[in-house]
Image (cartoon, rainbow, N blue to C red; front, top):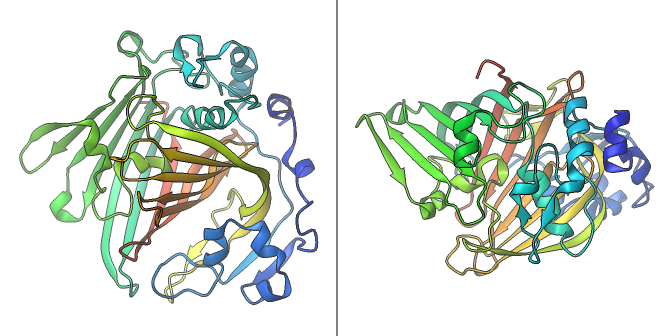
Length: 387
């Protein structure tokens, strides 16, 4: 905890409490929004709208919450040490894109600053670390606009960080192949249900080159064949879910000046009220209205990043991300289409292992505002040193 505070230069409890100070730790219901108008200022628009009783058209509302004192979060000591050792050497070009030859390990920009501050925040997310190797079990449930279940799937996933490893051996590059090919990470997603998708596997391998296309493969179990997909196929809908493949973990789109480039801006730097990183997994889904119950919220220092798409051929015209300034995890992503209509939204309940300084996706709630569909994903992730 001490090392991470030195890395980012502050502790979250010291950076909050100035906006709507009348809203103090305690239990609240949606009816308190009239009594405390500061809730609207403290919450991102999507979160504020979800602070209501469950009911159509979207699952994932919450009618009650408990606000707890803001906690200091941190990463594993080896990751903090790698960040302190290597971050000062990372360089950017005149557009703000990172020179990957100058990156070694850790978070590249632990104290974002300067004219390219917004893209620095996004690079910190790109270099996120969930155990470096992880294995995950996921259940995804989809709901139509009447909250009738229309999809239920279960999946297994396993992930390897291939470059910049500082926690689980091998450190640095994962192997000679990854170093030779410039591979940064690889992710496999195996579908177990529904039955017509059983055995299908999606593989995505990312490359460090700014102009390199990532490798996107699909194993089709019924055909027993591997299909190599093109770069534009990553905009396809993930089966039964309200996300595209580039929405993996919320945001996995490559930061590049040539393939669907963005204009990066910081719209705000201030505190917001978001779900606390769960340590006891006490949240649950009610059968009536599919509300999320048992949520704890806390004030979090955040960057509000706006990414405006410069290529009109991309599915999203702009993306709005609320990124935690202490952990570099996002709390909410709002995606707008090319007509600037709110399209897809996702917000997570992160989990936290305090003993090892690691995070994991626990609950993900998502909504499609154009077809009035929603989903809730429940996930269990664990370190996988055997991978």
